[in-house]
Image (cartoon, rainbow, N blue to C red):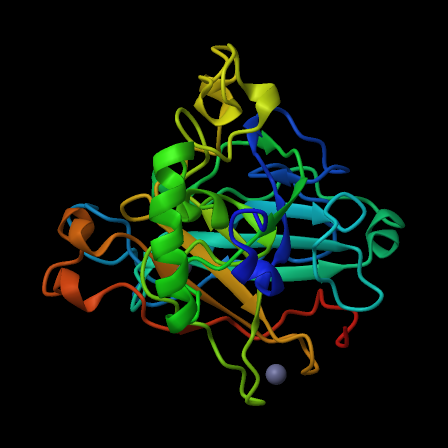
Length: 325
Ligand SMILES: [Zn+2]
Ligand SMILES: [Zn+2]
């Protein structure tokens, strides 16, 4: 990349792409939508948001006062995911979310839990978490094994203004010869850890209460690279010619991704402050603005009011054993 775009060399960031593939993950492995390593005596988290809702639910708008069990989204062992930020003393990150829409972002609401694995495995494990009694199918990931793969990213939407103009001119020239632009290769729009958020709208980095810009911890995205995408790994392709033009292997294609559809194939970006005690975190959600009218909304809300509204994550739970990073 820097061979073609030396001007962005200083902005390189490491990322670990997760490449979820439908499978049967174990509680002892990193996974997406898979079973969590969870102590039997630890209460399972529930969402009690008064106004969360399932799109197109009939006949009532909101789900009601009964708490909804969260569903596993990601389980990441630090030993398997090189770019994972974990507080000192922790080696496991779990992300769950309530599989319903939550105003004002109109996205699932993520909850993070950091653990020390040795604290969990000393006692009995939970074998069957409670299922949510109500959910939006498009927010429940199917069980996937993950294939953590390191890569280097460069800013896309996050490119500083003047540099953006230089890169844009340069990219047009290179695209004519390579058939691949800077934007195709700079940032991966898929589920990943670290790197740059694969924004589909202008960047909106959250700022912590301490005044620091939070760090991008991970992205959960509806999209995964498939046919025609330069980020699809070589081992998932067949044929010959330039790697990024080879088609997907037929046996791989049906297993790609967790089957999420957040809004109109949008992403949820999770950010954390690694300085403040308690590891405060927030999330952002975006999807293509022009497609918003296709996202079902409760009566009385306009589509234009929706996405990209900052949402503060809930206070860290009791599962956080180590407040400092
Ligand atoms: Zn909820
Ligand atoms: Zn902070």
